[in-house]
Length: 130
Image (cartoon, rainbow, N blue to C red):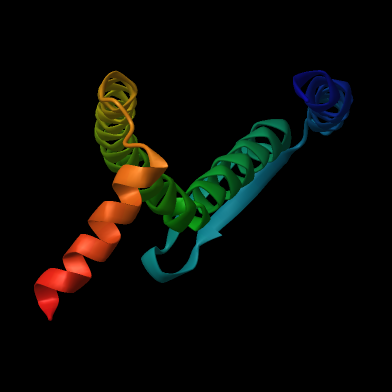
């Protein structure tokens, strides 16, 4: 992108400077409400107004992107907050996975009741309820 800016900007600057210095006559500027009269070279006036226009445009562009910069700052704050929350949740999930692994290991250690024992437990509970 910088290459394209230079490719366009350098010829424009060269043309403006050549135009400014070819027009070397004197120009009179009247500042109307103050009754001030300024006489300067036309080339100086051209360069001054081009520079003034560039700076005014840069300032206007910078001010117009203020809401975008504000939104970007808010998004960065939100991203930091969400990253902290995600790290907390990842630690919690890891702890839960460790608990699951521990429970699976404990389950494998305990002997499983036989089918006969299970039937006795089922029917034994019904008799107690009656």
